[in-house]
Figure 1 (cartoon, rainbow, N blue to C red):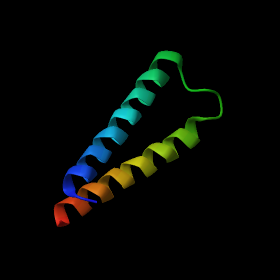
Figure 2: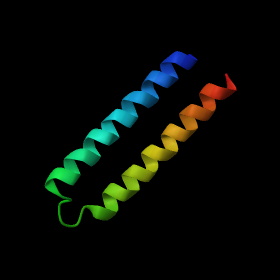
Figure 3: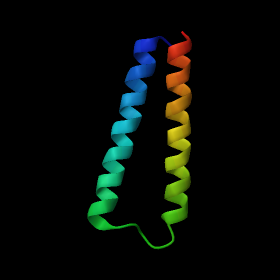
Figure 4: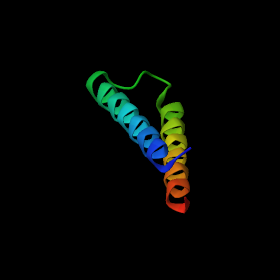
Length: 58
């Protein structure tokens, strides 16, 4: 994966997470989903960080 592809992937993931966060702000978090959503947000953050580190290395 080239640096440009990694950057584009990171931007798409960030945009998707922002859209999800905005939707949840608008409608609220479904009961019992808070912990799962926080874990997902943490996992996505880890993925984004790893992709960015990979891009810098190349």
